[in-house]
Length: 416
Image (cartoon, rainbow, N blue to C red; front, side, top):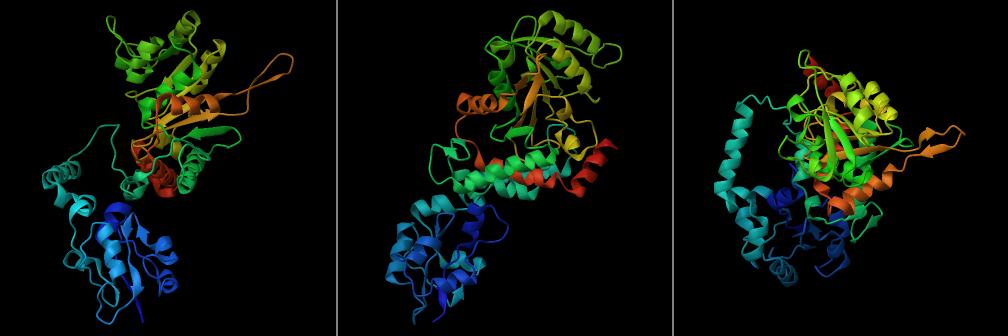
């Protein structure tokens, strides 16, 4: 007798985030011929994205067996499920499988469950497509990234780092996170012996705050480009009467500025201010500054004051990955980025940190970097709980795309 099962195509699409329906392949079907819903075959292959896939020998009447019906009922599906020889086409599913109760809450598409919200989503999509966005922090995310974001990875909780989780069932989540780390280093042509990265920050602002809390004590001193001059809120912005950013509340900040005539960063004034202020972190980063930064000069100023050089490349990370502008990695101790701007990835953040030798003393003794544990502990448990695994998967695929010739062509076009 041929095997038959119900393939819940639209449901698999909604849970798996894939363009094409999930289904068991022919080999798995053959392996499970003759099993019932309580057998090993069902336990191994009977669920996809928490949806029941009922497998059995085809009965003469083409009706689901009592065991199948019981299993379906336990998932909130109608007991009147019928199967046909072979696999049901997903298009005929609404006529074949009736949903009620909890199953309806779980498996309805957005346009069915919340048409009011779906209408707003459609309007926003139309606005994005028909308008011309000139906002530097926005981009059109790739389809593969969107598929990661709408996948079942969203369901998993995984506090900790790969191999050091507080919860079970993270073997594949670990592989995904390690893959994201590996590809992030590859995208920027970094030696894993010299650099590591954390891909768990929820976005750029938490990533930056993790760097500060990891490297210096509360009220430690930092210097960043002033917000009105093209800097970012998280670089310590405050006014004469109010501390605006949490960075300026929990740390002591002094901004450096651009020359009022040229509009360029005044590195001489920065050096002079650093000599007086003695910051522990000097930030080489911008949010609204159209020139390349002099990372070598930042490095010299940081070294002269015993400070860490921290590069925030959130807005330009795609250009750096493509190699069309100077990279901060040659000079920085720590580099942070978002992944949803010029990288076209998910809304997430990444922190890169140096490993190996930081300096050599006069007697020849090597001073090693100790940034890895500081950064990792600052992200979790210092600032965040469980990471967003669907976003980490999005990082993995966007970092792979960033290594392609097509991506470089895209970044070259930005420069033009």
